[in-house]
Image (cartoon, rainbow, N blue to C red; front, side, top):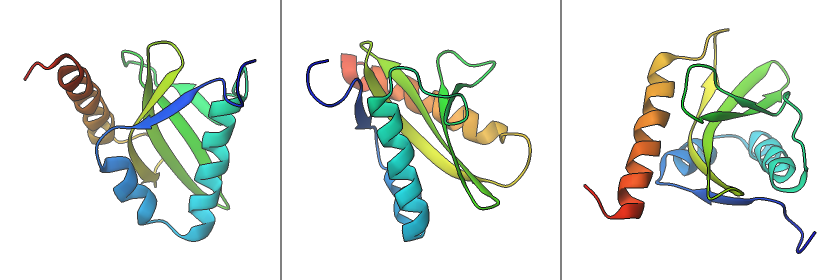
Length: 118
């Protein structure tokens, strides 16, 4: 392996940072720890990283701290580049459709911005 990381993390827009900065230090530390797993492990356990069924390549980074559950949506670009989109505090068993739709919109916007199309 060249370098320390297998994957590179890129944050698209402000949604992730708005979510991250609104969390307690303990939650931020757990988010950092799980993102470090995503960057370094050849195979990330499903407990921490899972494809979101019914989507085109959207994944969720899964964080649990105590009884609280958090999700950060992301996708891959150019193989080993992980693009972080939006995050939220999960309060029900089902992932809110509005959060999935937001992630899909942000992914589309990312590619439009990347290719210079609007």
